[in-house]
Image 1 (cartoon, rainbow, N blue to C red):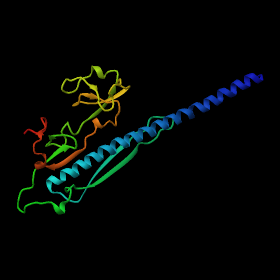
Image 2 (cartoon, helix red, strand yellow):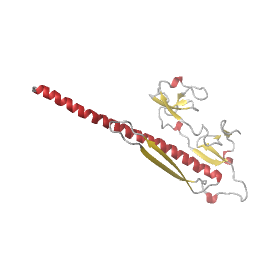
Image 3 (cartoon, rainbow, N blue to C red):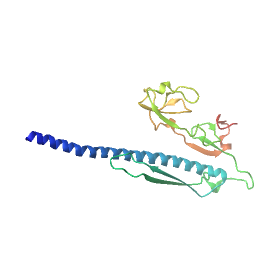
Length: 216
């Protein structure tokens, strides 16, 4: 066996050892990204549910803290070394919403509490249901190449958002909602956000009721 053959054999052995280690590192990185994505999705959903329940507690007269929990399991990506499932536990606590200042609230003893409604900060429509599709929007990420052929729940085409997509072609991935008629190049666009207030119905005088959840 000459020196050249020995060198080739050495390189083959090194490749056989390095490749599994490289693949294991890649799979480990993918697992970490999956865990972060899963935790973010679960915690965001839990915070939204807890805040809604805290706001709705005002209508039923509840006081004190409201705590919601979420337990779930992450199953790691299959690799050379089998990894066991990992359990996670999230817990979110909020105070039952009691208005701007309960101490100065002018309520006539014995009178029925005023009806509460929901409105967005910049909107002029009254909502009775906090889960109305106009308020609790479901955002979907779709291919920008297909958005021209898509239709919303009402059969309308999607047009460029005036805030994040004006004068720009659809990005590789755009964001849409079933109830809206705009596509957004940025997931953080203000057009995809809803800041909702719970207010007495008397403060919304002159505003129209939502066609989906108001009912007049």
